Length: 193
Length: 193
Image (cartoon, helix red, strand yellow):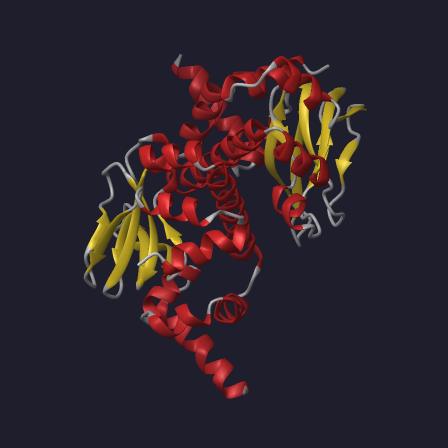
């Protein structure tokens, strides 16, 4: 535990060994088995989860019963329903483990306390928010402007680990494609190469 | 100048009078006449702009030549192409004044320096990013789930100042509606009341 978290923090800010040890005490370790949920749609999201091991996804189900995949997250990433976590509102997403996973959970109160006690943790959080905002923006632009083939190739280039680890119908859902379209796109790509 | 900025900062964090005075020295005052641009699509967005007076919008033009309104911003708000500003990439948005406006501009370097010299400014930036993320998420959810009438009523309730100050075709573009649909929706609402 904590190896991935320390790596993530040290990549972004400078913290002392003592601060790292203090940091540990704010997190709640949690194991999830494959298919277990961290958050159910409609509940208030009380945790921001850092992934030490495994892979999770967040999704929502629309009025017609169709599932829409919002985010994948693997080792070294954070996952939460950020709007619910930050505003104490009901979540619109469900968050579920796609493999047996090991998490480090941070409550809103623990996050606030950590930022007060370790100012560099505030900077770390600010940088995470910047990255989340940029990723969100890139995703919206991709949805608006890229073809199905471009979406699939770009996802594979950016996150090869994800494309190999999750079922294809989830990749299709994440890209906003039908499974049939994704299957056709994959055949076209393999015929070209 | 600076009244709105100080109000915005003091609403979110605690800073001393000396810090406020120091803060002033990092901003570049700028006036824009109506229809002048702060940023042209394709340029790198080097400023995060705080609005002391006036109203601006950001928009992009798609491949078919259609204009899409991304954001309005009035007194007390920030506006920028955040992805471009944070990553030094080419902007996809144009930012334009809709009235004669007075801005306070912050470069990336000045922003970094301010966060280093005044730790509470880092917290202020973190809170702005949280709000921007939450607003983005709310906008996506609104686009996915609300009817045209709900979108218009909710915008008017949340930002009455904006709906009264900008042309209706821009409101339509912001809501993802045709001007004809918005006109029909407004008639329906006025017939009901």
